[in-house]
Structure formats: structure tokens, C-alpha cells
Amino acid sequence: MLNAPEGTTLAFDFGETRIGVAQGDVRLGISHPLATVTGASNDAKFDAITKLIQEWQPKQLLVGLPTHTDGSEHELTRLSRKFGRRLHGRFGLPVYWADERMSSLYAESLLSEAQVFGKKRKAVLDQVAAQAILQVFFDNGALEYFNGREED
Image (tube, rainbow, N blue to C red; front, side, top):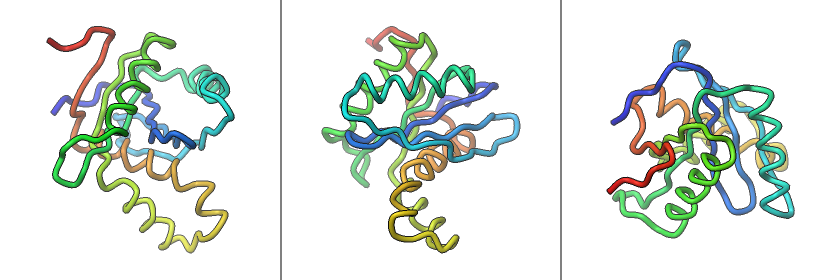
């Protein structure tokens, strides 16, 4: 596992329709849900992400890496890596990937405890999942790192 570097981190729970975003700093070790990015096109989604990056000035980005429960990869794993590489290409920031296998279950549990249901739940579920991914990063480190060069 790679240790989380210091500074503000923006985390993304990538989905083809919605992208959850969370923010936090490793010195505090606390993650916070921030936003759910949606849009009719990738350009619209990246415009929203650009605004978040300008506002929060992160030192690095984190993308949840979805896998099957046994750790094997699937199509969304590939798309999440592609999304992370696109983030790096647009913003020049290092990108880390963290295990997100249990993030949605964790988010569902937190929202149930908070009595958030229906449309309100759908609106925040992805950003709370991103919060869970970021907390895993703070607690356990990253699975992978990308700084513009593919591993050999």
C-alpha cells in the first residue's frame, strides 16, 4: 500500500452517470462528502470537476477502484482507471487509486443511520461513497499511483 501524502485530496467515486466527490486532508484524517457530478456529456462533467479543483486546490486526486469482492477486475475497473488518467492529463495532479469494494455498502449504512431515504438518499449516495473511499485512503493507503507514466 502507498501512504497518503499530505495536503488536500479530492476523491471520486466514478460512475458512468454520476460521480461522487469527497474532500479531506490526511493530517486530520477526516473525509467529507462534497458533491455529486452529473452531466449530459463528459465535457459537462469535467467542467464541474474543474470548478471543484479550482475551489479546493488539491495536492492529489483519488479514484475508487471497483473490483469484484474477490479482487478480480471488471469493465468498471478499466473505466475508473481511464477516468483517473484523464484527470491527471487535464489537471497535472498525481492520481491514486483506492479499494472501493465496500464503499457503497458503507454509504448506504451511514445514510440509513442518518434516516436519509428516497430522493434525498439518491442525491448524496455517490458523494458519501466517495467519502468512504477517501477514508480508506487515509486509513490504509492506496493500491496504485499514476503520475503520467504507465507502469512497466
